Image (tube, rainbow, N blue to C red; front, side):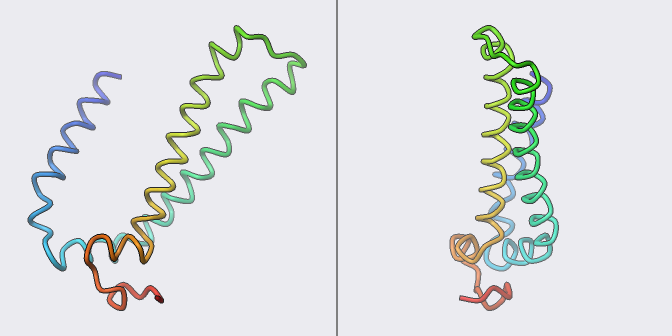
Length: 115
């Protein structure tokens, strides 16, 4: 886990250091170019969140009983995973939408998004 957090920290620092390089049209062109990938990742995040929640619920349905120990051991991690995947889906939905384009200062007509 520590290794993953280090990778995430390095990626975050790199992105924040290079944001001024994408000034004006850079972010707009990047969002436009990656729009199919953003849509695919958004869909996979929502599907992943659904599968995490489904797996958690099916375990309790199949077992026939839910004890507090099971919820503490397995349930909290599953719920955290669900909310993280769902949050990623929401963020990607915002970035690929017209509101996200306006947030980044892009011309909506440039992105091909109807107002």
